[in-house]
Structure formats: structure tokens, C-alpha cells
Image (cartoon, rainbow, N blue to C red; front, side, top):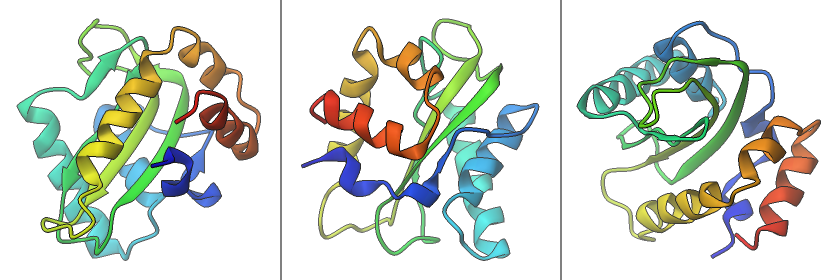
Length: 150
């Protein structure tokens, strides 16, 4: 499994906007280009998921994820928020880098958990937060994924 296969250039944003966790979740969902009703439902599902426990894994990275009827196949997006947002991360620091994963409730390909695991593995690399901060294009994002062998 190659992580970059799950991303698309139009689902990579280096300029996420929003002042709150909920704003950023909404901005991430908008990268998936769903209809307005589906975006609202998915945003609510992600907010509920975050209320159970933050997906902020530390070092400025969060991996919000859920299963939802709003998608028919696994969808993944990346967004960077330059200023950072309070996300109740495990290290109590603001989050700048967001990897969104959404999968249907029943998934024949069974990719949801492996993709989540690969993203967590990628995020553990010591230099990843700094390299994500320095990105200037979606192409550089894809090259970073490739350079880490994920």
C-alpha cells in the first residue's frame, strides 16, 4: 500500500482557514467536494468523534477520522493551518497539520485502518512536522510522502 495513492492534489490545502477546531474540520471536509448537506453531516460526525477524544497526536499533527454514509469509498485529505488551532492534542499544543480520513461504514477493500496506521507511522518521523511546515506545493507534499516510503 502506497499512501500517496489515496491523496489527490485537489485534496491538499496548504492554507486552511478557521479559528476553531470545528472551523478547521469544516474546511477539511470541504476538500472532499461533497454536496452541502453531506458536508454538514460529515462535519457533525467528525465533531462528535473529536468529542470522544482528540485525534491530535502531538507535534502539531492531528488525524481526524470517521466512518460515514456520506462517502462511498475511502477519502483522504491533508490541510495545513499556518497559525495552528487548539485541538486538545495529546501534548496540549496547537495543531498545524491535519490528515483527514473518511470511510464508508462497510468497506470491501478494508483500507481504513491500514491508511490510519500508515499516516500515524509517517507522522512519527522526527522531521515530518518541519517538512510539512516548509511545503510550498502539493507536489512537494507528494514527494515528502514518497521520500518517507509511505
